[in-house]
Length: 569
Image (cartoon, rainbow, N blue to C red; front, top):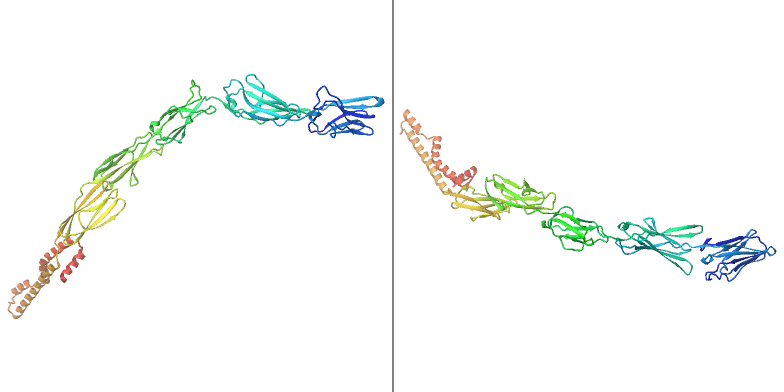
């Protein structure tokens, strides 16, 4: 027994006598059964070895004789070589004898090819549905095909498993076998693996070859639905775009209808932008579900919110110096909030209440309350109140000499940065100290009593500061010269009087008695007495100088300088 394409050897033991003939008895491939006949293909005797011409084996056989047997070898074995071969011996006086053998030829088929159905298979079909087909081609003798599900062989079972076989034989004599599997699928078969196995004969054994495994697509209705929030991650706030996804276990995936929206035949419901009114319970149902089956998905959607902050007092508030004030800040929210108060970027309080006590100019400014939600940082709001300190400040009173120039300064603090104006004409210099303080100086020449005021204002209000400058007479250099002349003349008169008295004393015109001396001594003018007299005169001078000093606001050095100037005049 040999396989196709192999070398076949047929041997028969005989006693070598005079000659040997080899015949084939099986009809050729084109000979009809019942018309078989023997045909010689070889002859040999002691003197010659002849392969007959014009046979199917001409050029393909070789006969090898020896003392014990004669061996027939066939090359390039074909399917039609499967037949009986005879060896006939003619022994002359010993008589004739023959032996025969049947040659079997085998051809392994090609590897099996499996192909699943391209469309899905519904589990609701009442009869088995075609699952796959398997084909084994060009085998000899006819191969067999067996089906497997998850490596377990499938046997025909009415109403559950059907196997259809189609066998064809080619003109060359090879067999092709095609097998079709019909199977009653269930939902569990969506993960099953199907394969086929071809078995065929070989000399002395049976061999098998298995195909690749395939999966099939099983269609089944939805029995469970799940609904969840796909976006955004975390808590939802007003203004977000929210996506709700509905998913069921049916195949193919069904379309869904949501209870709060019209059917969009999709598995995602988009809500954008959401508000607190969108909070509530959402449900979705598959369109392929049984009308009587309660198959749905459900979830609770909560949209969180934070209303704008409400500050009391609103916008701005006027306070008197030393006054107390309590400000409140509130914002309605669905979550717990934290409130912090700030002024100029620095924290000045916590909670929804801010207490301001004993107001001063430092109290003025903008107070901001920031409301945040720790569990949802994206939610935040703020409000503010502007505190303005008002009240009448005491008038600033000054004295200045007529003709002199006085500098009046005014400084204002506020937000926004205040501007300063004067109700008097003068040389003004304005400077900005910082973002909240403005400083202004105006120079005014005093010609008479002056009343002035500076007006500081911004968007939040106005404040006024008043100045009163009293003009006092200024002592001129001519008046001082007259006084000095009078003093000099007085001194000259005293000197003359002393000279006269001394002359009379020398001439004896004046008595020299002790008692007279004492009188003259009393009348004698000493240095100290002259100072006393000068004091009398200098009191008025000092009074004038003091007035000038008070008016000019000069120091002691300036007084001395002014005094020396008068003397020089």
